Image (cartoon, rainbow, N blue to C red; front, top):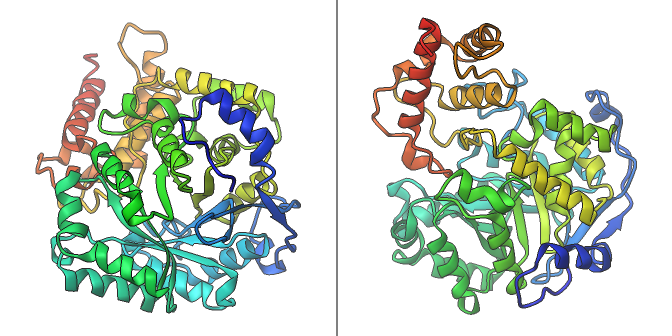
Length: 466
């Protein structure tokens, strides 16, 4: 990764530098074809190019631009293991990890909080079948529960991660969810209990090779930690970046921060960025039909999602872009995008910014389907409700008034789809406003308020009183 200027990077400056330096610093390595077993499960053609790599200036690690997020591992029923209670399909995880590594992926990101606490074990099982120096493991100190705020509780979680991952050192360790509950939580979870000091010593001892944090929400925490970069010497920082959040994250949710600011603050300090939510919880792979038409007109053979991945990967200060992949075709599509990366031109960058402006006309709820709000004590499928509302809004199936053209068709599409997507006993009408969900939401959505709004809307649709 090239050295970054000590100033904010404008859009034009970024694109000029990307052409001159971004490709020059993005190495490639030959990748073999996937195994017969792995490729036979996919419906798409195999990637044929070579993976793009970025170099971490802290350690010299050559990291694949595509990082495998182990948050949405496949279950035995074929769904993401974050949904329902089905077991992780370890055989499929092994095959996907093997396929990813054969095609150049070497960065795997997990957490004690993922897949109902089972992601680290599944990740360790899959990766331990390969030489230890052939991959980088990233995991997190996910000490969200007050019981893990003590020094002993946090250290126990850290050591258990090593046990589950079957390693004696961690390549990339993150303080998880910085900013989710402001400075008070930062002090409770990492500062006042001495855990950050402990992790710094673990890095000195080599049991942590790179130390960073993932940022969610409160900008005061982000700025506070970066202002002390000379003390903590962050090796990397994980941020949410995509072409909608680049300039509109705060407009979508006032508690969020535009990715443009986050990226530029890291670039000033030459801190590599790891990117999460390149698809904004799937929203950028399921865009309105008129936007799909525009994307397909430009690149008929490329997926809608590939535009978002190209956007995230085109920034020279980005070390790797995480993708939570449940199915082999997701992995193959992402491999094609980054094998090698075709950086955005200035015209394409401007086009995506215009696309983001157009998308902001749709008043969607900023749910990323992370499921941190779950389980609901009253059985409500919170993400299912919010995502169905967003989907219908994006597809134009949100009738605004009985006087509008196509009202009956849109009304039926919304109500029938709602019952199919979310069982009646798990719909918004069951919400009593206990608010156990909102404190866990990285996007700081007022979930009870949104559920009540949607329920009121549904009732008016049923009664035909809009």
